Length: 463
Image (cartoon, rainbow, N blue to C red; front, side):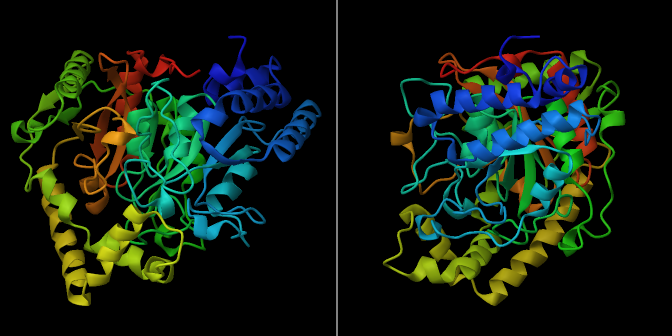
């Protein structure tokens, strides 16, 4: 075992606790010490619950030693995106307008963590109201991407703090949410693994909504195995969220090690490679070759529409975001990120007819995409067109979500995981897209890739 428990993935921490070689107190002390040392620069956390987390770790240690363990995850820390409610704690949603907004309930996802004995370290920063892919936040501060010690680069959003916290080993894993890219973008730019789930897989009860049609919670960790474990804890029906009722349950762990041999994996059409950085394409092509070497069949796919088209389909997201946040968005005196305000104000012009027509067209496009993916186990793309860029190069009029937005609008599921580095040492990422409710297959593919590569084991320069 490595001397520093913060360098171990969650599943290894679990093994060490069960074997008695580490205690929850050892782990918590190491995590809080790293947060104290690194977070003043990295700015991943908006609040750290240090006294309560230490007390919970002590309680977990006593329970485990007395034979009252809640299971293999008892005593393992986790970070939570600050749009997720914990009763009695402030949920800012990344907004300076909500600094005193104490939650009156606890989100279902947090209740499920606690039921396993996991310990919430604190809340992580987010783009204001979860609306933005770059990871920037005008008033609350932008987390520092830990892969560049000198240049403040985009951490990815909107789950920016969760991505930075996991990458910098401030937490072994974290919760994020994904409405248009918000788990996968920070996972890609921070060099970690993130899962965008299908609608209704995981309850959104107690989570600040951006778009009730598209919001999905997701797991963020350093390894596919950890993501799979966390996903299994979070998924399932919740009476407080009607979208979860009647959804199939995904039994991930028995199939995780099934490998990719015999699977048909579709490559990016040639026209979709235009405008993508060469180092991104090189890493992507190498990933395809690697998976082919593991026994997968790499095939072509005929997309029914260019992926670029989904960047212009904003009627659903912004229409709903405006409706949910109208009061603060329209108040000229509210202390709101101006780029977020501008995006949400665009929703004011969405008519009822346009909104309903977009929902109808969405259903048609879902059918067309399902037909295109018939006989294909997964569609592989780069997660992003570029690696993380310097903050002073960000153009808020653009959103870097070309390879991600379609997944949400077509209600697919997707896994992003590290697949290389640029010459500057910035992480690159592969996206594995599967049809709705096929998270187990995406995780299986990602696990085989990750167990035969070591990109996910690299350490950021900031730690």
